[in-house]
Length: 419
Image (cartoon, rainbow, N blue to C red; front, side, top):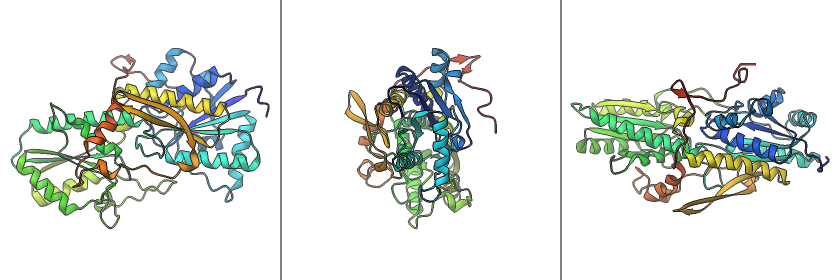
């Protein structure tokens, strides 16, 4: 490969969308153009779409500065995402041969993948195959996940905006619950995303302030969930106040390792990485509370709202997402491969953070959980250290570009069509 003449870049998005993932895409695109690459291709629905030779030339769709600003403010994955698990290299060489044939046909120098844990597994495998075959294509991961569970990085783009939305929404739910009196009191249970890591659920504590007590209890998946202790806590809370609001992670499990969501109904769907679909945790717990205590209950699932709420995005998050996209492109351009960009925090107040690159083999298929010392001793809340950690990440606002009273997004007809 002729290093003197730069050729092309390809970028993809994978895993669960966020309010900031497209800001990283904008960062990759802008940095690639500024560094002299001829074309920047976008995979339609990640590596799965690439295998079907579905890609676009992004320069045909991001034509102006306004397009780039709209892209940074557009939630979800602009290019489309996927949850495709690459097979082990020696189990299915044909998949890798096809990918690398496509990359050669497109004259690709750099492959950037924006995603979370499973996406970094893709970068790991592709970079390993490149070494095995002598390919000079560089593979670099750009972090993204509202779950905030990637190893070796202080935090991940997407988390700050989701945390801001959760803190805001829980505060509004608390206010709404307080406004109406009920005879025997009421219990509102808010279900928040998080399979094994409780970073998102812990963010519900951001609702607490001078004008709000915050949620009355928070249950994270890092600790075993005991239904009897939960009911005892609910009864004690109802003696003190008429409206109780509790935040629970969708992934809380009982002592025997069973998801609470599975106690109420059976979920058969499992994705390519073996992850069960988790839903119904709050609904099941509300049914138990209603049956045992006899009070009014309400279950609320924030579901995809917490990752799609670009109207509530954190300015810090959007700017850092753009920065990390540019840093991933810069790393690949300067010869790095098999790496992921990470954030390194140097100060909480004033908040300061920088980027580095780390070996993706030490990141892929690992999970960074909420430290035990950041959860209260009784396991029903997060500590002040957790709040100190998360608060800088939710600062500032990004004003949507409004048209006819609602936000305008960057949209290309055909991207979202089923092909």
